[in-house]
Figure 1: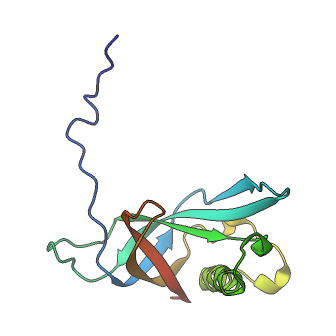
Figure 2 (figure 1 turned 180 degrees about the vertical axis):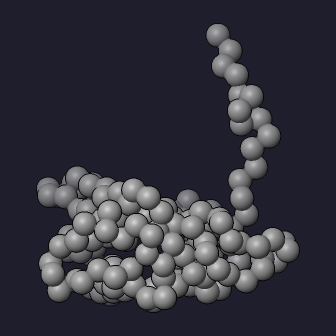
Length: 144
């Protein structure tokens, strides 16, 4: 049996955003992702689809406004990371992101739905994923 690929025949992935500073807005339905750890326990991460609100014209001449990007931060179980430097980096990424979107970290918990619509600034750099493919890496989160 043949399956139609009509819906994706002309699909072209969007090029990666140019490195630089962007203003982003958290979109609807941020998700908590739970991963079972091989040594037992779980770790939780936050996945937010965000819209580019402001950024420089791209090298291809296009305006980045309206583009969707994904922000992924680990929320807990930093001990699952072997490197002390890696643990510190992940904690800082989480703290910076949550404070940039208005979460009072000292409260000890937060509702992901409460950050929908929050605007913040972040820096995009181009790095590599686990397969060596280029990907956008977001960091330096700041309240806007």
